[in-house]
Amino acid sequence: MLIALTAAALVAGLAGAWSPCGFSMVDTLAPHGYARRMRVTAVACMTFAAGALIGGVATFGGLALLGAALGAGQGAALAITTALLLAAAVGDAAGRRIVPQVRRQVPESWRRVLPVPFAAALYGGLLGLGFTTFVLSFSVYALAAACLLLGEPVVGVTIGLAFATGRIIPVVVLAPLQETARGRDVAAAMAERPGVLRAIRAVGALALSVAALALVLAGVPASAATEVVLTANGTDPSAAGAAVAWQAPNGGQAMLSRDGNPATAQPIPGSDPALGPDSIVWRDGETLVVADQATLAERLRIAAPGVEEPAVSERWLIWRAREPSGDVLRVVDMQAPEQPPVDVRRARSPDRIGRPSLDGDRAVFHYARQNENSTIEELYLPTRRRTTLRFGRNGVLLLNPSEQGGSLLYVRASTDGQELRIGPRRARRGDRDRSLLSMHPTVRRDAVREPGRSRHGAGYPGGRPPRLPRRAPTGGAVTLWSTALAPGGAYVSRLRQTAQGASTMIVSLPR
Image (cartoon, rainbow, N blue to C red; front, side, top):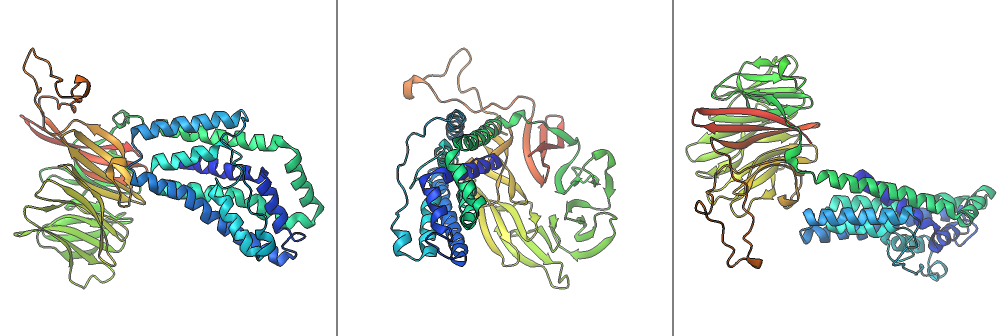
């Protein structure tokens, strides 16, 4: 989706070159124009580009920030965004007249009274803003609405930069060429051949259509995603590249598959394995062993009393330890393994710290509080700076996060159900994250009515009671638990408790 929106923004910016302002900019910055010298033209082209980039980010990034503040990005907003993208695509593909139209040009006097590079920066800012001069494509309106409705600052900034780049390219390419016959011919052809603008609008329409399709596909219920069982007897997955490791429950055998295929898995001489980029760590009693992932040759041994749930990266080794007063996270810098472990986070019982996960210098874990709220926290280990990435409210539990690249994977559990969610690795509201897997809650509610009776509607708007969350099936409780994130997929362990006993499996899903 982001790629398609970026392409549409770039094309929308290019279309702006066919406006009176676009032709005016080429003439203003040309060496024979107000710039007068090629050196001034070069500087003015750079300041024009800087102003346009600032303007584009201000408009589209600002709209995205406003949308995020308003809580955009929900189902209705996605549906409206899709409809607007398709409507703009139809209008541009048909070459319809732009309505509403902004019939305004940049102030002509600036180029006469101000130094040309400074005037060029101001002109670039106005053109980058998008709505201060002529609009030559329905895409501009659709993209602005998409930024507001999606509420994703990264999307807004990317669209703003792409739109500004589209406005910059024709000007900075053609302006220096106006001293040549070829350059003047190209500028004249732009003004005399409207078919070129129609073709550009058609390309933008195609990009908008692709973005709308991506939004539709993103809205498909995650429960329809294809699940693949990695192992029917495993928990606590850990992934690095194509490799994946896991632990058999109840003190069983730990396994490692270097290609992600359970048929090629081999035993590990320890328990609680976790993978780094080229290493693996496991627990041997109250000692942590860091080894080479390819050969399992031992690299380092660290004494870790009370150790549970380790994680490893190229530089760091982190683990959770259980003490009488509660949980503690400890870390060792493997560039200085002779230094004692450092305590980086504590939780007083009954609060709990979850299983840590490492991605480079960043460790992520959940912190469950006695008041039934939980947070997902991230530690930047070189400075020990702690950031709360997600906050669960009203009894919502956020559990067992994993990080990889710029993404965050975690389990969300509430009385309404359980979800495996993925979103950007930054602080934001979790209700805008994408659901990869959803299922019933862990607690089975009652029928809320007596046999032979129906729910009453008294006191509800329109006499209709609210829809009830899904009811767990009889015969056992299923819980989504530990997670792992890889470039090509996401892993989650599922615990099933029945009257006959408990079983645990690990499933993988496409991202």
